[in-house]
Length: 365
Image (cartoon, rainbow, N blue to C red):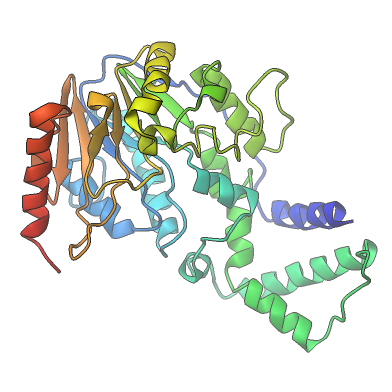
């Protein structure tokens, strides 16, 4: 019965969207890119993104693309936790065609929170994110959604019997569905404005000698190439059946590319063989990840084989707004507006961390 009710409500949300053909399959690999700017998880923080884009020279005073042939890689997890997700998405959607016309590219990778929003897992979605969708017609849309839910329950009564559709039930419904909730859910449907856009992107890409993805790759997913994993992610987000022999439960598997934290957290001695296997399997020198806020700076593991770009905010300091720039073999961390060579091993790495500590200590809250 529950499945039938969910299908009825999903159909209601789908009816609010503009249907469109399946997105064209985009490429997943690029070569001969001179400059790549990498930004980690944003989680609804528009000001943070805007600041970093400006520091990187990717936008001008009018918020138009000024990065020329550079590639911007945003590692996923745009939504949830803060109120300005919609502003971020709208900005990235405007920049994407502008970058293409200039010879550049905007890659917004699919993270676990994009999948969660498309699949209706809203545990981390904030009131402000729903409110961003609210307008004068929102009360009527919520009323219509309520009526659809009641009709679905009446058509398919749950095993415990129908609830009393009284004022208390409606008040509970309204609390769980604030104004803007219905529009938010419609926008994140596969045919909705944001869901449809997510489906034009990838979970994993390779640019020259570097693999970029949100979470990581565990041994269980090592056999699959980039295209196979991307196709599985997109099929799952569209609600299509899994491809025979393809990755299993890729959206929710903790070993999969949207969730795996082993490359970021597991002891290096224990994970070294897996890192080497991923590098060999995909023909790269570096793996750049978001998802895991392990350090309060752009940092590296395995002598630079793994680079972590989801930056934690250090205690007693403001968010460092740190990001990565890759220009050929040169790796640069931009930390609090300062450009530092990202040195990845031995005493050089220790020197890099000391420079970061000095910058953090100079700007206490």
